[in-house]
Image (cartoon, rainbow, N blue to C red):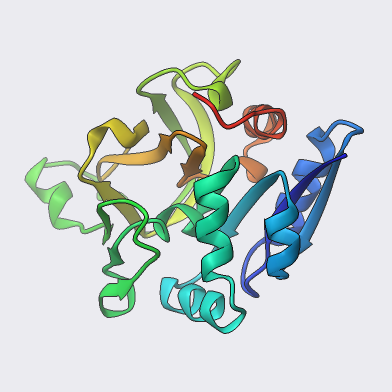
Length: 217
């Protein structure tokens, strides 16, 4: 039986992620919410959802002795990061006074600012946080986006976005105040700023693709 571990660091929307994965998982897949490093190590696939503040996220990961478990999962098995689970992969975040993150990729997390809209002479001003449905433009094919047309709409809730140095990491872009990276992908890692578990049919398609993904692109 294949096992999917959903990382529980104490502050995340775990129930909706669990229910969505349970809905699309085939009979051979067991979905489990856990903060046990040994369970995460034994899992075949790992999902890292997150919400709230990055400083609390990193503090809780440290407190629960999950830092190495997360890094090992990123290095070794199909890994899906959601929202804060994407932002945590960067070097630092502007949130909470430049919080150090996991440092997996050379990139930073930045806050949306209204002056970027002013430079574009856009009215009315778009809201912060970016909340609700928005189009996602795939920048390249990927196994997790199979069956999902570009410009499909997904659900977002965030005030911060990632900016990566290696543009080859970018898997999708979305327009809100500016053109920002809404998903990244490299090898066995796929991470989204949007919430597939809250994104109706297309979100479930992405999750269904994940539960059968072998981690190759």
